[in-house]
Image 1 (tube, one colour):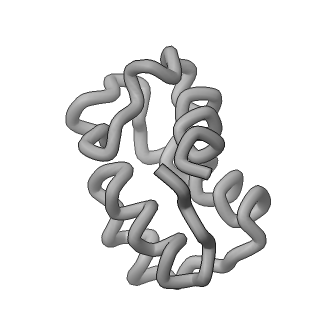
Image 2 (cartoon, rainbow, N blue to C red):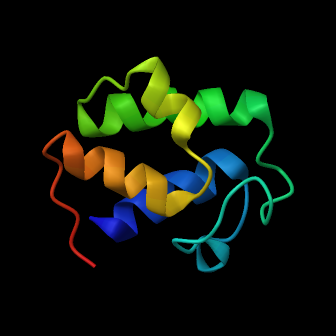
Length: 79
């Protein structure tokens, strides 16, 4: 499932999937703008059938934060 998550992030951010890691975020992916962050949030909710709270959305600073919130919503991520 982590592969699926990385592929989704790479598609939204328009970067190679190999450049996406748990430590990736707006600081390391130049195309990760606030707008694309909202697009990513929408895509994550659609793909994984979850609904993030405002606090969760504002808490995302890197991919590991997304994984933590998905896990908290019951999504099983296999590394």
